[in-house]
Structures are given as structure tokens and as C-alpha cells.
Image (cartoon, rainbow, N blue to C red; front, side):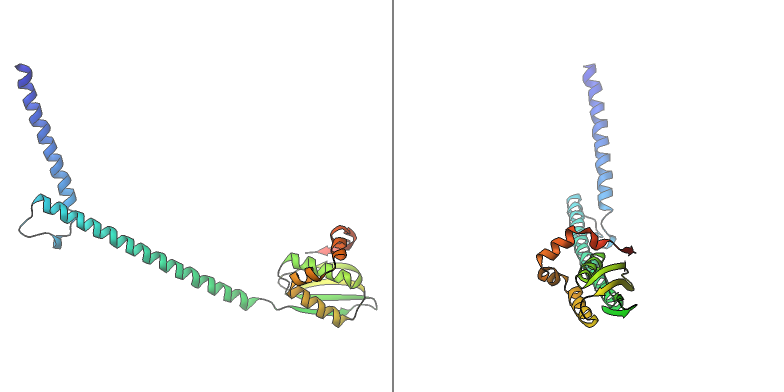
Length: 199
């Protein structure tokens, strides 16, 4: 009997604590509802819970809509910046220009402006090696003149300029139309690159 008497008060305390905890949780939940959404006369707990759930669902929906809107705006901004960057690059892009100047009776300086990559520079060296006895100096610059000194050109300077310009503007066509034996010679004959290379 004494054990049952002790158990009953403990149950009352537990139940009281549980109810207080629920009241606290409901109070926190109902605090989320804006004042203009609550009824002046007061609602039953079930109605207030439904109103809180609906309000939370509305917030989630609005959050998703705003997130999608933000993603679309960021995408548009990224495209705009990319377009502006492309326009800026194109506006400062140096046009291709090739000039050949006589230095002595058998030495010429080839000035090429507008070489964008080092690989294109190497292709120019290979090209010039076809039409002269030797390339004696090469200096690469992607922002100014790339300079090549050649010895004893085999064809007229104007022809070299025209062919070199066509090749630089379409290096793929240049590689495809170059004779295979020449490509193999360039790949394996290291003497082609036996000159003063400057950067």
C-alpha cells in the first residue's frame, strides 16, 4: 500500500511536467504565426496548430520561389559578365600582321604580331623552316611582335607573308596540307630547333 501511495504523486508530477512542456512547445509554435493571422476571439489549440502548419508551408513555398528567382538572376548575371568579358577580349585582341624586313643580302627579320599561343609560335618556326635555309633566332610575344631571323629565304617575301598568314589563321588546314615526310622530319630532326630561342 505504501508503494502505491508513493507512485500516485509521482504520476501527477510527471503528468504536470508533460503538460507544462506541451504548453511551452505550443507557445513557441504559435509565436511563429503573425499577429494579423490570429483570431481576436482566440482559437482552439487544434485550429492554431493548423494555422501554424499552413503558415510554415507558405514560408517554405515562398523560400523555394525566391531561391529559384535568385538562381535565374545569378545565371543571367553570369551570362552578362561572360558576354562583357568576350567583348572586352575581342576589343583588345591584336590583329594578325606579318612583315619581312631585309637585314643583309641573305638575312631577313620576320615580325609577326597577333600570335596568341606558344604552340602557334612553334608552328610558325616549322613553317619558316620550309622556306629558308635556317631560322637563326626566334622571340615569342603574345602582346607584341614575335621576331624570327631567317637565313636565305627560298621564295619571295610576299609569298612567305601570304602563306604564313593563311597558315596562322587556320593552323589545322596547315597541318593537314603539310606533307607527311616534312612533319616527320620536324618531329625528329632536332636541328630545326638549333637556334637562339628567346621569351
